[in-house]
Image (cartoon, rainbow, N blue to C red; front, top):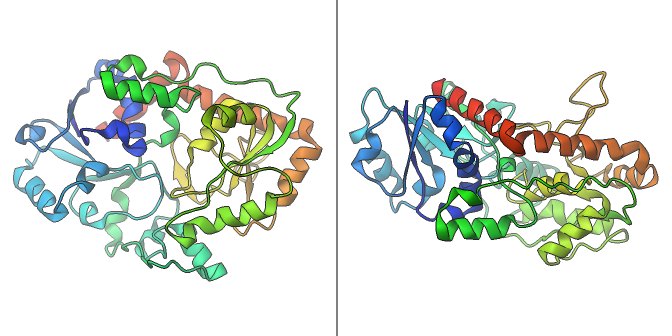
Length: 365
């Protein structure tokens, strides 16, 4: 099977595109052994249609001066045999690009709403959670916008989960390796951190939450501003340099990781690597792969969970982190299970095999 992937020429400078391409590059040989030949394209050429599948990164299409013209070119050149996959690499579950959905064979996204019917109504601020804060807290954006609703219910079945940004490297030197890859284009720099911090005892900090709260949209920044106010007596929230930030996390019992532009955040995976207990807004509304977010209410009759969830209205947040601080020994197994799950998908040859199998199943289906 011949698979062509269309990316922006500087995809390594965009964290969403880089996170999408990273596990493919990391498992390239195994994917080839599984019967799929991958070709990367960085500009619109006719020979991109010479294959069985064409995967288009949404960041590439977003750089087109005329998206509709881009789609028209695709329609003119597409053969009956060629399948087109549109990979929406944005880090949020919303804002489906409906102009592509109606044309492509499959629409990939790293995380989607479990209730796909939600995509049939417009969401204030373009996201499910921004719509929630608009309705519940009457938060309004200066530049109001809504997501484009899907009008034909039959199109919902095209929306599929591919993989999320968690498979990218989030280790101490990840930013340096990303920069080196951008210069030398060598896959030697495409590797995940193999050295997690597994010292779960003697953590001198109770809580870490270094977050920015300045966003162009009030509905996006609302959750972060509220969290800052709630925890201001327990920890500093202003940003510090990366190495100090990661060192603080390695010495913290728990880490609060709110939503940003998207629901998933690099801080989630840095927390797993640093061995902290991840405390995050309830993720049960979303479907993603791998599923890093397993809580008590997601699994019955088991004590296996990878994070602690709090309600979107933040009503139980203080109670949760206070409980962790007071009874850390009772909760630290969550940090261990979160880290174990994270390493299973990112460390060693076995993790490459897991991804290659996932990728091959997705394209064969």
